[in-house]
Image 1 (cartoon, helix red, strand yellow):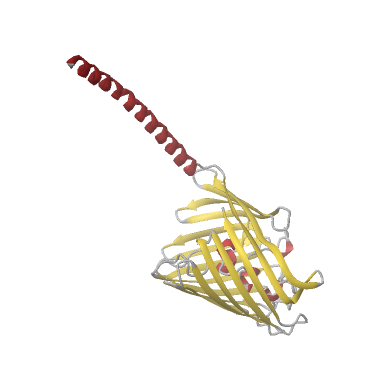
Image 2 (spheres, rainbow, N blue to C red; image 1 turned 120 degrees about the vertical axis):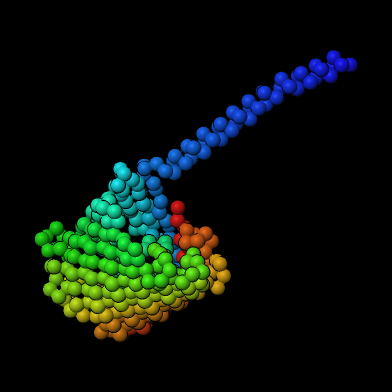
Length: 355
């Protein structure tokens, strides 16, 4: 009997190292997989991201194909490639496919000049309004503000920017209206976090936290190819718990009709040609309230300050499935104008998914 007990005990003891060996082997594999995953996340190679935004639009006042507007559209189909190219250099290249063809958006490189000072060269957005600089998948409504739509444009140029304490600044020169001619568009922007950590690169109150934050900016640009072509902009954004409010105003010098290449921002968003922005001071105010963790209500009023007395009121509700990365948006806009198109209302329902 004792021989049987001793034999069983011996077999058990001999099998333990085998089991332990298998466990250690499995643990080694898991650690190697984790190490490879972390290495992939921190590598300096290209990273691909982007978003798809589609919507349904309906209006009995606007026409499409000879009938009332009532159909689907791709608002944006973006692919972005970013990465590091050395210890202090990085890059970004992006394309939009909403028209069915690849359209180059960004193509620039950035590098560190000194501690807190960076350079940027290539094709990029002019630093002016926050509403124009934020990504399309981070907006509160399906459209940017009218002024944000005007100042979202990109151009080829060189910029120096930096950050010191509560201040962020940027100055640069871009090709401007004469292309590669010897007259350039110069610009500058100063932004300050006036309360808390300041507001981020997103519209509305979602994800802003419980503390109050306040940021403000002043921006200037002048196109040397345009007589009296100066534009000055002032903006402010604030979040406080579930509330957010933002305002912006721009003053366009008298210039020459059509010199800026842009018209009334409220109308141009709907393909309607309005008066030139020269010698106008358009402005807008946006507010929102998070009434649950997933739902945010928003309102926006804009005045084009144009000869056609154009103004707009927009109401909307967002449902955040996964922050701004996945969200549903419903909005209604009414536009009052003396333009030949007349007053019109538009209903929109959209889905934005980022990757």
